Length: 159
Image 1 (spheres, rainbow, N blue to C red):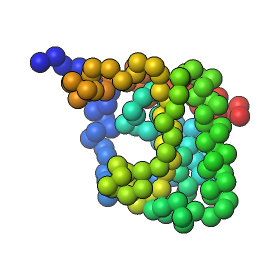
Image 2: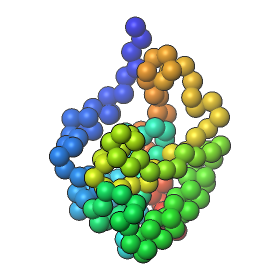
Image 3: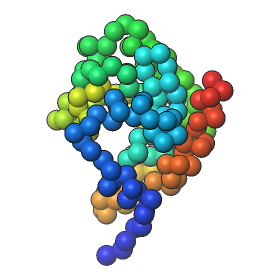
Image 4: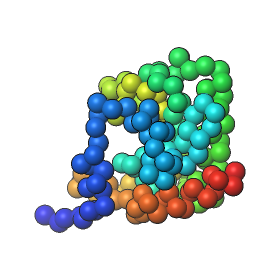
């Protein structure tokens, strides 16, 4: 069996506490420590610390709501404005061929945190699905999260 080493991920694996809502606790931390890229009035943009691809972002409201029907018009409008901004910035930084964008509402739908609604933005490239996830059940992420933050944060700051 071949081994793929990613020791930088271990610090995240050890410190994930599912009893704590990350979308409520992370905004109370410093932006760099929490990997927050942008703070709006009603929502914030944060890197996914367990990304599907480099540049995987999430947009979440500050208010703790479990589904989209509960979002106020202001929260919903700003969320989709931040979606447009995020897509533009990811296009500039990574030049992806496409995106997966969406919500996972409820645990059965794949939500890792099903108590706090959040929107995923995942850049995709032709050929980014290869034998590793299919045969090896392993996903290779080509860039560390600290590097991703350093690449994207200045672009959000100037927006």
